[in-house]
Amino acid sequence: MLFSFFGRQTKICRHPERSGSRSLRSAESKDLHFARRAGILVFLLALLPAFAAAQHFDGARAYNYARDFVAIGPRWPTGPGHIKAQAFLRDRLKRDNLEEDAFLADTPIGPVNLSNFIVRFPGNKDGVIVLGTHYETNYPLRNIPFVGANDGGATTGLLLAIADKLRAETAGGRKLEGYSVWLVFFDGEEAFVNWSESDSTFGSRHLAAKWDRDGTLKRIKAFMLADMIGDKDLDIQHETNSTPWLVDLVRKAAHKYSYDRYFFKTEEPVEDDHLPFVKRGVPAIDIIDLDYGPNNSYHHTAQDTMDKVSARSLTIDGDVFLETMRLIDER
Image 1 (cartoon, rainbow, N blue to C red):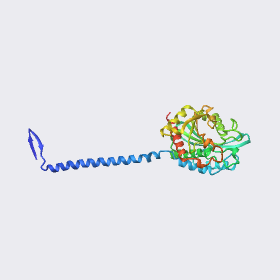
Image 2 (cartoon, rainbow, N blue to C red):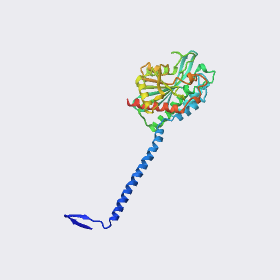
Image 3 (cartoon, rainbow, N blue to C red):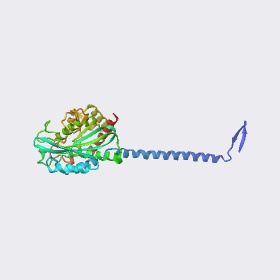
């Protein structure tokens, strides 16, 4: 019904109780809609921890690779385990752009055949990030069951798991978003008699010199070395020969994941596979935990076994390596 009131038409509802009912239903509908949206939001928030967990590096995969690698037994150069270790790496990396850098090392026990393994994943930026580890065990300890679970084994597993991730990202001819990434498995890091500048780091000294001669070193934006960082009680030192800006990036990467307590609480210089690159002007860092067991009692002993290694530590390592690589790409 319409009537005029001061020249304006006003609508009178014949059934005001129905109008109130409609208003009530409208309010109830809004409440129901809000409740549904709130329920969806709560559901999505509940998924966040699982989603965040899915973003972490797969340390369990790295651990399994390390376990299988260490099961070979001692891997000292000239021994049968050394040959098996090389076959293991060839098999795991056979689908990739793999180079075997074989050379004859002049060692205190005479000439020894050694081989570095280099696997390359292409990026869309001009330059290379190199990740490295050594894979062999100590020659002087060849007469005891020294399998180097943490010393060579864990970081070999770490790089193999990183290779899986990079392989997936470059499948079908794709390129990494950022610099190319090369993984290097060094041979001959350990001394043959007594550690010295000439009796150690045979593989890295050979490769750094080779890449210096052919101009490859100029392409390297950063070199990151992983050594003895599978320890359950992870305590990574600040290695003082390392490039300061790379140390800062690793610290920043660790902080992102609230891993600060595992990094750089102590500092000291370490002679390791990064030094041949540092000496040639390559930005490099040694990510190393030298405190292995009570008073470092597991290092270079038969106690260096897989029960001392942790998938959790390898998750931390992988998270920090990958985040540091991302930060290097952004520089």
